[in-house]
Length: 221
Image (cartoon, rainbow, N blue to C red; front, side, top):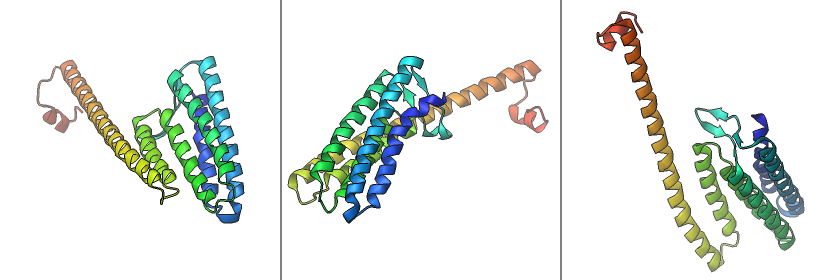
């Protein structure tokens, strides 16, 4: 149902804030920080709205915005709604803190951009309705969080944390990619078996035991 697309508002508002932050260097950093907090509040409101839909309509999935199982879709249930609320609330707290802590920082806009991009990726991850979105969200979260952790690259603790994070997220990405490949192979096998069964059934109805290729040449299929 279309109303199950409501949770996508949360990451989309943060994507807009990301674009504004990266295009607002230097003296316009306060604008980026203020817009980031507004985007985080809208994401939180979207999470509460998603919870309302879950309560009123029950669990469900949105239509796919894309094709061939690749694109954006939402699976709304108790787990995804809880994670949406948690990520959106913590994200708003972090963005609000960053707005105060980074006030006057020369590269505040850049950090705000990576922070909003990280939150958007996590929000896409927790509400993913298809495996391709899940894998993409995981990889995007890893890349954006890595850049956020290295905002002060000269800090030893930051580099150590980024290294550890990189190892575990790469392992997770490989595992998710392998799962996606396995799922694709399983689906292909099921489709092939279904086609074979339908072909055998059709041949049985026609009472024809000749080879399938010969029947194709003679116009049966």
